[in-house]
Length: 545
Image 1 (cartoon, rainbow, N blue to C red):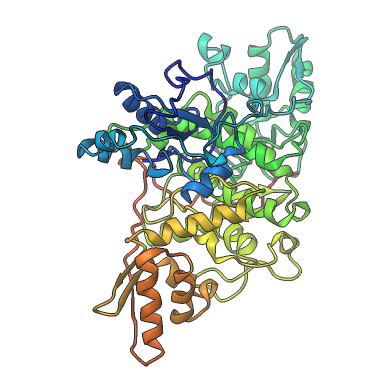
Image 2: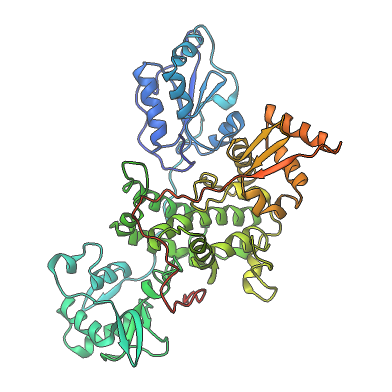
């Protein structure tokens, strides 16, 4: 088991972790870890139970130590454990050795040895990093009858969500329903007159209906809601219907509100804060079987705060980002979108459901709307046709064409996680090291027997369907694909594939079999299933101004 590389600083390590290392007795155990990583805690608990001192290098406190860990282990996950210079692996490997009775023998063999001399094992000498805080919000509060609150607090009070005062007292709140008007049904809406009634109930200091109607106009101008046909201002009338911005485009996941606050100059840091928010919520809703109860995630008291925070992605200007920054940002955004979508609109369970899911579930980035397919194939794959399609996602006249990366790096397929069991595990990518990180995820993916397996005797190579669906990214032909895969292998496996390819030049064919893709997800049984969206939804409209 392993954890992805991210996290925040925590209190100083325990005295046992700081125990002095005797250069003449038992060498050095080194653990590269992250604060908040449960697998790291398990490893440390095991070592502490044996009273074995160790050196912990926290990547939360010393982020630059990640480079040392990568060079030593060629892995992106934590913990990574070393007995002197010998790489043990992660938590799973250490506990397997312990279960087999080999760990004690390995530690005993370190007796009389000195710690490794490489600087890569040295404790960083710089001051511990201070977690970057989000820039202060600058949006002015919304003031009603002398009472000032944030946008989210006012919305929560109006809707009775989040356990606010209205919900606690049973006060009247907005009744958001599907309503018929002039032979047409409008989904999830309310009338202007009903809003005025609710304002008068929740803010009794309002002196008149006319004053409450002025507040309604102010909220309308703040883009908290809009007319169902987008063609009228606010009117105190039971026959004029409005819809909250949060309900306007359910398939545009980050449309909970129109972002009207400051814009973080570091889009990757902003996105990582959103990811940590969502991961924290998800961690509270894991079933006994280790599956995620996504319906409970969506109902969590903190989910609305995440939904508001991720609206800042609306402001990111992709064409202005340097190529590696754009690549890392879009990889992380895609992986975040999948988790967000499973919670908000459900996970797909059929082939048609998956087609609809990837083509309709969207995010707004820089005022432009991108489906998951468009984000992957239009931006990350440098505007190449998606599998089973014949044309590129963006035409030359499409403003989104400027967001496309200049080249398609096939290694991105080892970085994108579509939520299926056969997908690569989720990693967090950084702008400064994304190329090295892609190298490592390529090695990790191709070394897995479930993704690449070689039978020399039968001259057969079994490959993940990813190499089939995206064959054009891996060189087009099977032989070219195998040559590229050989560059992401090591040791005996690499030698076997190279030998097959060399024999192939002598007209000894290599048979390639693509294994069945496992589309099962980590969603707990009985949860919401993606149904394609509400009838009449304006896919791609991205009503964000």
